[in-house]
Image (cartoon, rainbow, N blue to C red; front, side, top):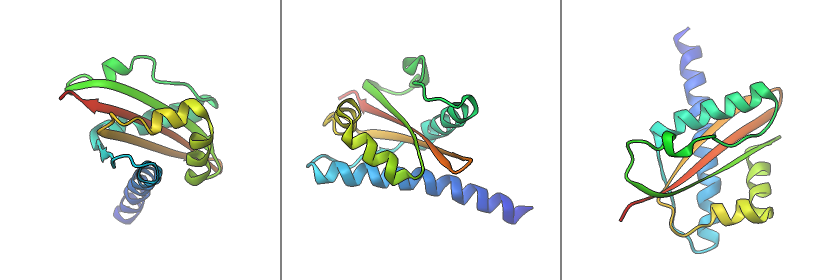
Length: 133
C-alpha cells in the first residue's frame, strides 16, 4: 500500500513539474523569466483539472480572486486544456492567441499547475500570478 501511495504521489508531482517545465521552456524561448511553482495553489489546480475531467468539459475557475486569497498578488490569469499529452496541450496553448499571450505575459512571477489524467487524456489547469511589487 505504501508503494502505491508513493507511486501516485510521484505521478502527481511529475505531471505538475513537467507542465511547469514546458511552460518555462516556452517562456525562455521568448525571453521571459522562469516562473516559480506555487505548490499550495497547485493542489487547487489539480482538483480543478479533476473536476473538469469529471464533467467532461473545460471551464475556468469561477472566482480566481477567492482562490488567490492570502497571497500578495496584483494580476492573475488561467489557462485550461485537455489533450493526449502535456506537450500537445502546451503546443495548443502556444498556437492559440489568448492562451499564448497569457502564458508569455512578462508580469508573471508564479505558476500553479494541476494535471489530472483520465481515460487516456491529460486535463490541465495552469494559474499564473504576479506578486505585488
